Length: 218
Ligand SMILES: *Cc1c(COP(=O)(O)O)cnc(C)c1O
Image 1 (spheres, rainbow, N blue to C red):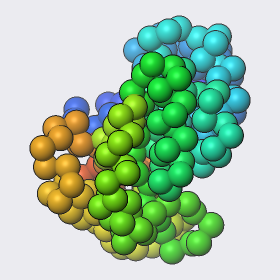
Image 2 (cartoon, rainbow, N blue to C red):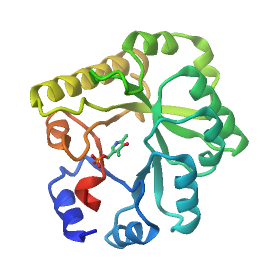
Image 3 (tube, protein in one colour):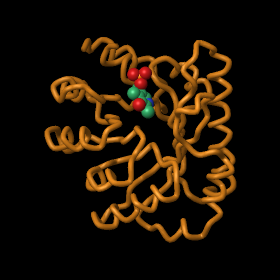
Image 4 (cartoon, protein in one colour):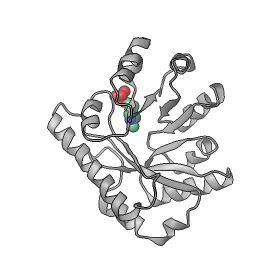
């Protein structure tokens, strides 16, 4: 890893955009190099890997879970996870709430939307998500807090398509904010943009970019 890559990414981000350093498959030594540069938010996509790294690294790191989360893995990350980006069903949210309750915590979560044209990517459709938000059982879950949305664009060279997908996510955010979260000031996160497309995401209003390769190398 070359620390200048990190510095370049960081320098080019607007101040209101948070950087999640995606450290999946990277060693604790590499993570410590970024920590020493001041980076405190790291993203992982496997529950056991994140848990192992959490045990070895400083306590003031904020661990973001960004991958597909299986219900039976929630218990590993519930004691310490700072934000789960990948909520894609009521059942998963229910599971996170139960685990959070056992740990005496409130866990912040993002609703993941399926915005890409590939069908391999996880996430809600808007209608499905709104059905969940209109159901009162959701509001009985006191140990989770929904703070925004997340999405992944299609892996394509077509920048117009990527822009359009990010615009879709931003408009979902706006609609949910106005309809369901208008009185909740913590509902303010749009997690979109990775190494190849974060420049577009910034133009489309992202508040959180998840960047791995551009920092750690390919
Ligand atoms: C791996 C990953 C990233 C980072 O991807 P890069 O292209 O390496 O920046 C971002 N988000 C998710 C969900 C990922 O799994």
